[in-house]
Image: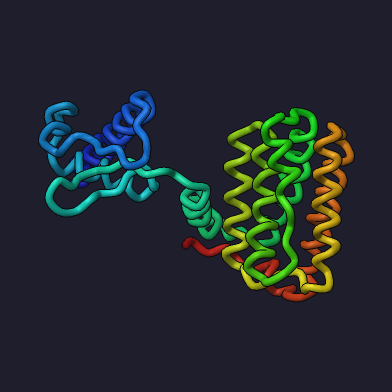
Length: 239
């Protein structure tokens, strides 16, 4: 029985990979519906249990969702950095990894991506970057605009893998410290830091962009540690 279950699990994983390949090669977009169960059973020549397990694997990883009711079935959804981050947190918790390590990873990634953004300087995004202003008013506007700036810089790096990892690390960290923001009297410094980083990127000065981003990130890391030192050694929990 154990052997059969293992074999069935491997079949389900293989079918899940085939379905994902079809989604990607077929150019399917969020909202597109996959073939019904009867068609899939015929296409993949597997049992109903293996097919449903394959679909469940894809659903858990945020690739599809199962739409209930008449006309329902598997539907493609848009994957997000949050999906990747949630999967990562499972490994982080299993490995006993801490928020200090998440910050350390961001301190490596974000300055490097700022350098890449300055070196590559995608023309269309330079204009967007110049129009991305950090708001200092209410907390939600400040958090939203600050996140937008960091995501814009990461996107300008031109490396989608680094971009995905960087966004996921930011999602994981902010999910835990969403209320831990610079106080209003310090937000002017954040605006200046963002403006200076944007200027360095626009000027194509990779070394300066990297240095300024590192200084900015270190400043925030020190603020978090001073306010909540216990948080830094807290293990990231799967969520």
